[in-house]
Length: 303
Length: 248
View (cartoon, rainbow over the protein chains, first blue to last red):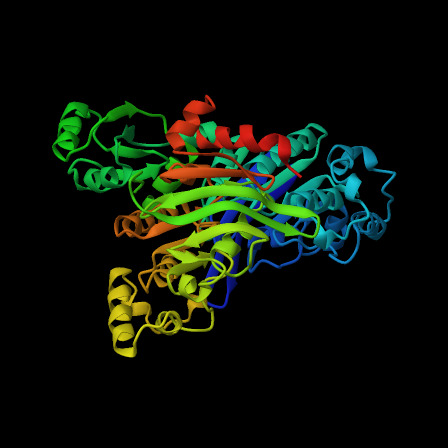
């Protein structure tokens, strides 16, 4: 039995189609990522999985239990960290943790092993009110509270949004350790680079799943020949590349531009000459393997 | 664009800001050149927002000398506010006003005349391809449109400097790049861009980047030089090397 089974879920809010034709499964002990921008439907989907919202169509099972009929049982089995910080800001760190343990009929001591690695980092501040914590600490407390009843499935809605690159990295290291202890983790993120840290990912946009696969498989589906181009002036480079007749797509990636061609044979020399003619210097054109963000944008264009 | 010989549009000298015993900004000194895209990076809680609030004239420093757009931060705050624009992901446009009403509101706040506002508003909607959406409420338009409109509104009065505080959070990758095209274009028009972001690839779009750690500037240079100095392949690695040991 998969940890999560979703078949043909749809959800509308008035005229807005928040989700349509959503189907996927998550295996036990899998780290499964939903990658997509704000408004893609990630939160709506997670609210359905956590029994907080009823789908218009389709069915969703968590541990074989139906999210509509068996919602009470599911709530015992899952841990949920919503995107918006939802702990009690006027309770202290330890009061919040004790409260969540009590609500689920357990104690902090009973499952301390599971949260120790995470909690230990905020323990020096255990008397501090949750509202006074920094972003990174809030995130660790929220994760501790979501874990304190030892859920079999952990659902995390954008835990790393607005969090700096260091805290993000540490958070993912925590998730990897949790996965090692057998917990199934479903996580959403708008950061494309985090996709590679998941076992499998679903790329989601406008309420639809565009692709589901392991990150390396997603990358293999990229259809065009891709190059990285750099010159002395990135802004003019982007403008001039867009004028070049044979190019399929042009996207900025840091200090270089990723450009794709539909043709198999690409004449790099003519492109270089063209750019030189436009006044560029220090031109480098290097063949490239697509990353998740290249694939995401390609899928966006296609749909 | 960064030109070493260009005038200093922002001068910060020995900026200190204390909250009680906590030092949020610990003797910061840096300059930003006219027309430059200046990336202001740092971990959560490093003190970035404190600095931005001071530069915008919203909060007084404890000590230090600061000139923004040629105006003194202590004595000429009103002039500073007229010469800067500000946009953040959290606060930008009014959801329950229409596209046109938002443009008119902000242009009015920035002191543009009525006849000019009408013209600028229609030019802007034309440029953004939003003419059809003129009378739509902000809450009913896509996030990507909102971001682009918010940026355009923040520079509708042709400010010397625009402050962008995590402007692209949560936006899809295509829209994020269109947004940066607008930033590049504004910079070509001699508007100085002061931007914070958690996307490290965006740090590489900046002419120069400063990285703040614990209230101090730990590094400031072009992305290329920073990568060389720290022997890193990307700005993400540079950032991790500098900020990793210091979190929380």
